[in-house]
Image (tube, rainbow, N blue to C red; front, side):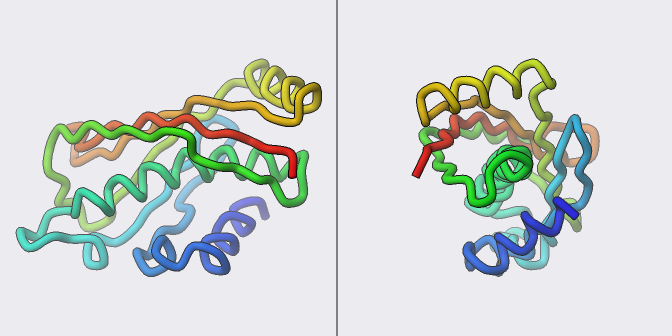
Amino acid sequence: MTDNFLNDFITQHLPSIDAAGVAVETHNESSLVLSAPLALNHNDRGKAFGGSIFNIALMACWGALYLECRKHIENPNIVTRDGQIRYRHPCDEKIIRANCRKPNERQWEGFFAHYEKTGKTSLSLTSKIMNGDDIAAYFEGVFVLLND
């Protein structure tokens, strides 16, 4: 059910992410994996385009936070404060996958307690994109949950 929240949000509000074919592949308490076809995200060399890799990796982190926030807030206001990526290897997998490891329960409790107290809180999240056994890209971002 929660996976549909994110897929529906992408379809309704993020046309560039939707056009890239980004969707939830797997989701559980410890991680979120988004996938997108290389066929919609390649460069002139048949490898994953760097901008697409950035967007998919960022969305895995943003999406992990969004899904957790939806458990507490009907329409969370999440913004990206900072995002950096390190490209290490080309990616030519037919399906590009971004994996975001989610914070543990205690970290979530602190995150939401701070939000309740101040109406604003931030969280650093990371994701990685693999190409076979190699890390193709590593993303680090800071995301802010704001009280409307």
